Length: 226
Image (cartoon, rainbow, N blue to C red):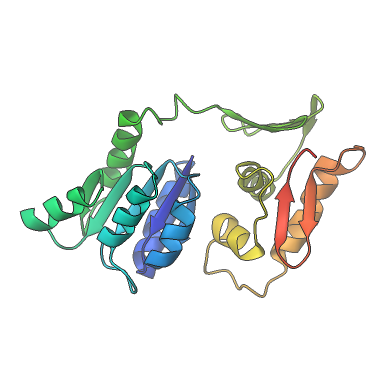
């Protein structure tokens, strides 16, 4: 289950990201409105958590642009403004719900779950497995099989594989992997992504004629069955 968090306050990012990851969500972060529009337009997220006050364009404009582009992903707007006029303005821009700061994580989680139920996108509706070719990842049991043979992965390897399998055939940059798997605070100059990609490739590709995990030089990595 993928969530886009659009926020520029690092304290809130850390708080929300850690909490949602602990609940089993994959969280991607956009720190400004233009990045939010670019990522949100991909249509891969089940919910967008959108801060109203962003450093470039405000959350209402982000919301309006996404809706005009035909993106119907549920949007939960965050803001410190709690007047009725502010709430009405946010909802009329296309947001599905409104949460004022400060907020408790429990309330945030409950509102996300409610949005997903309304759109029929809750966990019960989502497939519990991801599959590319004969590689199968089970989101409930955290088991991975290829060709019916079980593959033992560490928790980080599993998260990395899940990140890649949720975007089949698409190139994922090292920066994006660092953000989703290790968190934005990780040193972008580290080679941890390359190390884990090599380890994961040995486990899922060695001994198989069809190689699934590919390096796209200068851009990143992709996982596909072609």
